[in-house]
Image 1 (tube, rainbow, N blue to C red):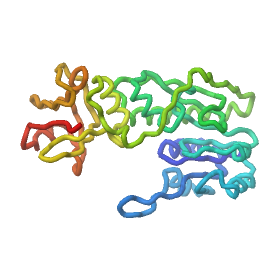
Image 2: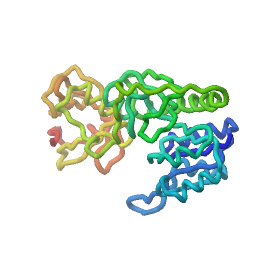
Image 3: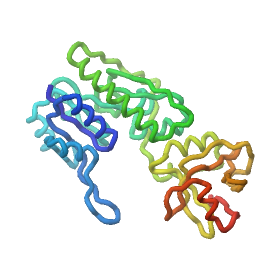
Image 4: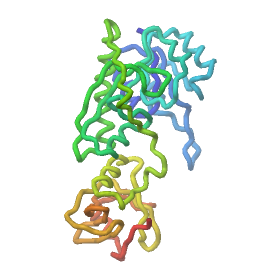
Length: 308
């Protein structure tokens, strides 16, 4: 079977590596164009490009996949299957029609829940205790294709974005290998229930800001949904206003007013709408990530407050 792989980030690169390890032949790889770093302007290759180059695979980096020239290049390859993982562009019908067998996508949710760019983050923000992987046949409408395989995953309360990313990545590898085998026989096509659709829009700058007027469990869900990258933050007056990213926190037995900060023994407590949270790992603007004990040890004043 001739397979063209589309993907960009580490999640996709890990799937590609697994396919290669299982001796599944990849005819070509498509990834985004190299991006320039903000400060150095140095061009950085995507994780998928790095895997493709390491394995001497035919590589395409179109600006837009709807470009007729790129679509013609794909037609000339005569592929049987497209596998698409976190690629980040909508496929036009002309491209979806290219592979002879199917165009499959690995989506990090149990569709029809959390269609969109940030299913893992949004699911953690919502405090969900279960999610999973869906292998779907791609359609023109975003994440609305028929489903081939679904695999569920329980989410512990301690799970953060990295935990969920790594576990769903492993589940996705398992699912896509099963999907490739099923395509050889009589694969299923299960329509999505349109009455149960929810969405997971991409994470914007405003989504990174913590709101301590919310209940404590909601604040904690927000923290773990963005940990360790990009990190949820607030602004704290420490001599001067500093942006503080919070990566880990737990519920406290104390009750404080929303945004109120209290230092108690080795604890940094922040009030919410319900009970306080106790911060355990954080990063002050301009400094490295640190444990709360290290932060408190370097404090010259205990008079801290959140700047709304």
